[in-house]
Image 1 (cartoon, rainbow, N blue to C red):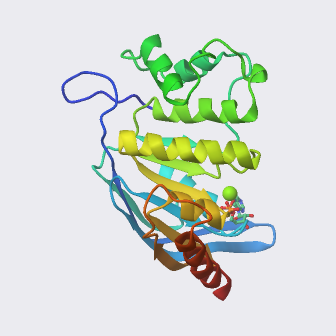
Image 2: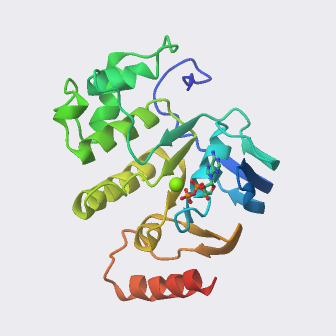
Length: 254
Ligand code: ADP
Ligand code: MG
């Protein structure tokens, strides 16, 4: 991952957000049993600064779509492009993939090896942002699961991405910790104005977080729901429950 330098040569958050365009995207894998087509002719447009969630069952192809967007995997056919076309993309995985022999701060520094503009102060700033001010010099083994995932988020944000891809980032955490991190993610998203393309199989999580929910299944995006609920969203409000029922009905329709 490359570093981001601003037009004025300074470093620090740009509050820049990128648009994602996906057109006619098809991905298939050649396996021993033959060709497995994961999805076909998928079109997605994501507005800059929006929080869009891809919701689908396990195996529906969610991670594959994020890998294609990040460029680590190539499509069978179709196009993916961004606005601006030189966007920085941050990636948060289900498990944070920290180097165990590096402290929190060194895990962040690691992705800035080729960034001469990186300073330790910047690393600390991002750890502060995710509530880890007391833990700069701790090793991953000295942190809770939630704290480790916070380091993963700080590391992704530290490249000042225009787009943040998040692949089930809270699904390995206990529900109370996951809920805390969701609230913090929303607050960070509102502060930094990033485009977030989030993946989950959890309907409640999708409704709580997103502006839009795209449902992926049987090789298609079969629903595109705008979440009109005001923020902050309370999971037991009447509006939330009504929206949830609608989403569940749609989810089971396929
Ligand atoms: P999800 O993230 O929604 O659980 P994935 O995108 O990981 O789903 O996988 C979708 C389908 O593609 C699965 O059936 C999976 O087995 C298959 N798949 C993913 N990656 C590969 C690969 N590298 N080679 C072969 N099949 C793959
Ligand atoms: Mg996955």
